[in-house]
Every structure is written in structure tokens, then in C-alpha cells.
Length: 190
Image 1 (cartoon, rainbow, N blue to C red):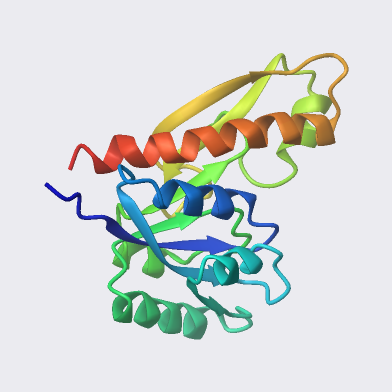
Image 2: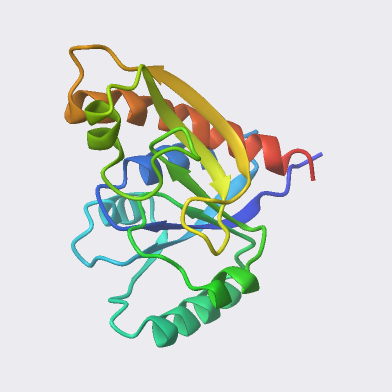
């Protein structure tokens, strides 16, 4: 029996390390996803090179007019028959309307143990508050920032020597393990 892979779009804004990781995961025989489209809110996003390298269709949008841009993106998702959206360092907040049209089919990875430290500068805040643990969370996207139902989390110990950069590196390593695990968890239970 051949596994029918879920057509997936990955949304990025930056370096694309999670995108690269998801692409490699998608190429595995037992992976439940196939990445058909990469969407970026930043024309200079370094992650776009991975789309080019792996020959994946890519589109960039400036989001100056959010509602118009989102309509165009939704049309692009429909044309490409996308069934799942993975946000991977996507630095734009999607509207309630966009989320409603793709309800239950948008995932995000966040560099903290949600519900703690929603939003930006998570590693700086974790260090400042002298937390003993941080980590990452894969969750469904809903209309509230970083508040959707949690799929999986991975804890990381914060050492006294850690600074925001070293903690980011530690957490990112776990993100690369967690995102594929979360995708397997939700897509092999369909």
C-alpha cells in the first residue's frame, strides 16, 4: 500500500532551518507529507534557497495590504491543492478569516513551552526570568497568538551559563525533532 502524502505548504520569513528539516522529513518514504509550496513574507528570506535547492514552488508576498495578500495566498493554496499549512518561523499573524478558511489545518512551531512566553523574544524572556526549563511547542493555529491546541512539546534544561543565543540553539535542535513527530502524530491518526 502506498502512503498518500498530504500536500503541504510551509510559510517562512527567515533562515528556513525548520523548512529545510521539514523538506528532508518529507522526502522519507514513511513521511505523511509532501511539500508542494513555500510561501514567504520576506523576499530576502534565506530559507527560500531551500525551496530552490529542492525544486519546490515558492512565492513571496509583502503583506502591505494583509487582506488582499491573504486572498491571493488562499487562491494559491487552492490552485496547488494544499491540505496542510506548516508555519516555520513565519513572522506575520494570519487573520481570523484566513484561519477560519483553513481551520484545523494550520500548524505552528513556537520556541517556548506554551502557554508560557507567547510572541517574540522568548529566549531573552526565559533567561531574564531565570527559568530552569524552556523548550518548544507544535500547536494548531487559532485566532489568538500562540494559543491553539498543543500537539507536542519538548522540554530543554536552561543552564546557568545559557544566554539567549545558546538557548536558541538548544531549542532549535529540539524543534527539528519535534515538528516531524507532531506531523506523524496527527497525520497517521486520520
